[in-house]
Figure 1: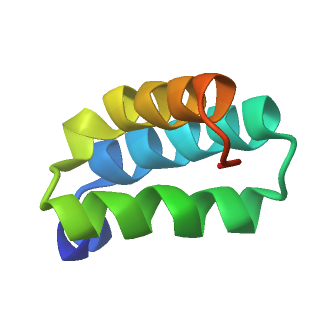
Figure 2: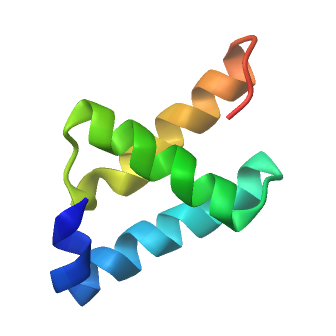
Length: 68
């Protein structure tokens, strides 16, 4: 997500989403950042979609067999 390096608002939004994912997923912040940015890169998602992605990951973890 190269645009994060040039956009402080984007970096802040993704960092906040990763922190939320870390708390909800009971995982280290670094692991949450890697999980979130990895899936967003694979899907070609933009920074403003970060919160939607953490909601999808959390719902999948809650209702599925896998963890975040």
